[in-house]
Length: 397
Image (cartoon, rainbow, N blue to C red; front, side, top):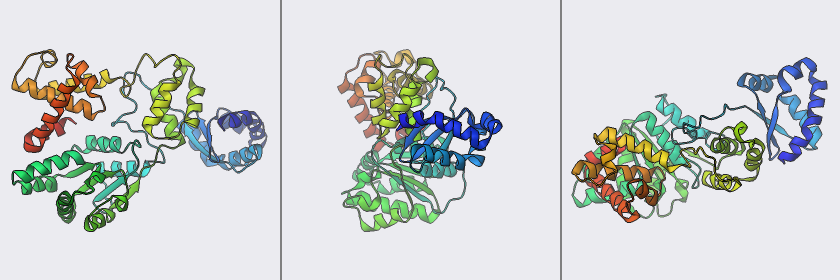
């Protein structure tokens, strides 16, 4: 479809010049560039936001009319401005810089307004969608903005089980109720856990009474979560519920461009646009398709999503600063309570950021995958039993 659009574009330009006039065409339409054609929508790129806005306001109906006549079926037009080449020394796609398009814009705008303190109807927000659509990225971006507590459901379950055994469930409930903003990822994993469901229903009811914001993410809509208590399902449905879909055409294009880097550097601009047309799926599926498209191997300058060493280095520096340990000692063989805690925290954060345990072990002076697994399990147990350890880790996430 992209080839069809590009083949038709020269005829379209001739018709546009005639219909709009040479002056208007040269000023606003001549440098428009087709980048995608999908499901009857042609995506055109303008050289700047000003040009995009001008064309959107004055020439969009004309563009749709001329394109429809040339291609032979009704075509809608979407316009975007050309993006500046990404800085390869900075992470362009990450929990701090999520890709935003029509598939996740509602969730992104909601979280943005929440972070800005703008009033919204209700205090409970639940976003659901399949694996790989960026739910966790959005939650982490939001957490960075509000600096509040964030749990994934398995971690919350472990904390609940530990609190239950030690008869301090009330303390954990008060901690969750009093959090200015409570963020819980993977809430669908509460399925089939009746005691935890009752506990969460109580927490949500108390937070609702005091008007505290709660943000949840789930793989499924509340009605699709199996073995979910009817009362808790009603609570979840009573909040603001929005779906996050796999990235659309522009989301795919922006994500692939971020992975590729500046198109002018390697001459693969058209290849990336074609890949955005062909590869449809989640972000991990797009990333895999992009990696396969690199006939000559991956680019020399990895983005942090691709290069685990960048992620490890960033987290290592953060842990060293927060816990007051030396980076050489941290990566060495020395022992000590503070060093041991710092290594556990570093391993845990790296795994949370998506590094494999084998990668973490390689960076931590050739420690085995089993050793890294022990570190992460040990820290998870400490977080479940010791609120100050959990607060330390949450402050670093």
